[in-house]
Length: 274
Image (cartoon, rainbow, N blue to C red):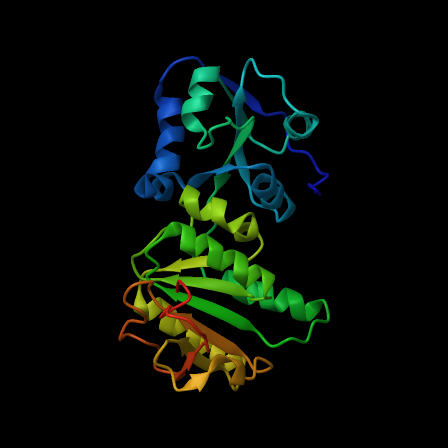
């Protein structure tokens, strides 16, 4: 995998041998949504996820590794390149506590949170157009996701199918929960995934987006939908709404909402997870 070639200044090395405030902060970033928001950082584990974070220009606050472990060429290369502002060196026992894997990871990254600003999606669309891509914008809005694993899988699917961004509305699973980050397999760093808790923020962005993209169609996925999703023309600008895994779409749909789509399916299942 590619990583940026321009190194940072030499990192500060912090050695942690006990369950001190540095280690407790790392644990909180892994386990506590409020702490992640306060510190504006989250933990990333896994080779692909860390490589994708670097490839897409996310700021690495710290790399975390075990003081006594023999590291791979990949891990040694990242540490030597100076991508992180700090290197936090733990004991073997502390590293095992912090890693979510049965086979303890050799390297974790503490990554800075980006702003929860839907303008990140506008920038993605503008960059595509500047590069000569003429595909119409496609944005997916996930309404109150219940499961971080489902949210991460959805972000991965949006990446694979060419969506320009994911809006996560309401109070549900956190985009930066470790389970979501893991399930996205690195796609979180490629596709702008923006949390929106206030309806007025969503409506303001949607009005501006519709103004820039006349003909924008807003449709929802629902098993009760009258139209088939494969009947929708994705060559027009599209905002596709997906509902909570249990309750579906909320009543607070955008004012510009047009229609409900269903996915034709066989068998006894009532929905496809979302």
